Length: 443
Image 1 (cartoon, one colour):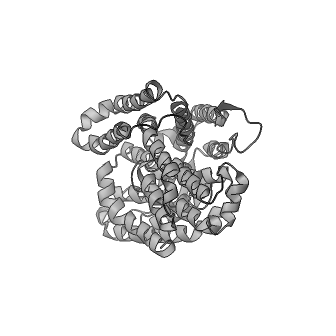
Image 2 (cartoon, one colour):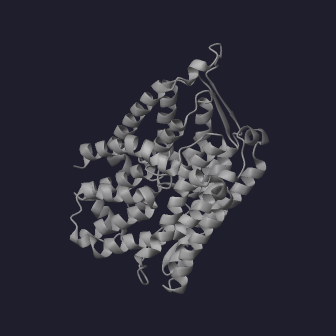
Image 3 (cartoon, one colour):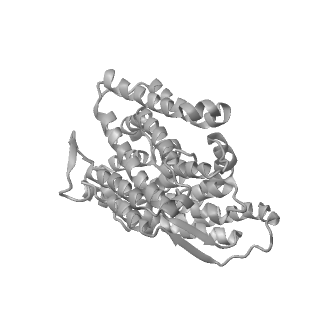
């Protein structure tokens, strides 16, 4: 979502619908579960439309709601094809669930994420990971999967995570992320896997499993034809009019808005579902409920989040000049906002501020390349790491987080609520890792 202040800045109270939606996502499943389950779709849509309606009626700004809806369309279309394609691939690891097995799985998944994106790797691998731990599956397995696969793992390539892809679109060289972020990636992954091992050591669930259970140590895969659709989904991300000339687009006040890519993705999702292996779908207990939950909730989040993002942009443009942007400040500010807001626009807003303070323009590719080649590249490293890593702090920090949560719950895992995810895992487990990254690289 790329924002522009082209009309009146929204009043600060307009962020109340967004905050209200966050509070209800956090408390609804716990305090009023039946009501929330039956009415969350209406609540999310109404709050989103209230904010969108205010922009149209009182701010006379139709550009931002339209742009946001196109961004939502892009978000949900890629998520849909990845969800459908992965749902038709049944992967069974007939391997004993031991700490080392899970560590190797998560390490491998962290690497794969950089070629499939956090979304693609998350929706493809969460079911095999749950199956691997079928005798001892606990909520912490899913949480660490979110930490490692849905967020931190995707920081080595622009394909890995949306903020890095936005930087690539603006002119950051493709290989820059690998050459500059691998140390941060390696340290974070190693420490998270080490902490995960401690959790694994305390899990005594296997003590109750019959010791005569035997394993073939084979990997069984059915529905392999869907791998084609997965590659198509990942490849289609590059069908962007901002990357490739000649691709049709909608001109929205000078901005190239993609639509062909999204049509291809949704059409591919339909064909993929029609031709998918029925046995694989059944074995995965596939249905559309998880993607429907994500679609409705993020419709409200995208629209109600507009004032918060626009106020952040306004602050960056008008107050940012008075702030000395040390790497520490860039790391924590981009990270904190990326925890609760869409990390892609947060990245772009802070990147724009960094560029302007260097008397450069983010709209000029050569300026971006000059910035990357200058000593200021340390700030871009802090921005990239903060935007990607902090996305794991909440369920809504990055799109795949909620998708993984929904799939896990649909398969019977009692996931922690929004608040418990933060208090039981994000703050005591992830935050110390983020502090360590800060102390080692940015202080």
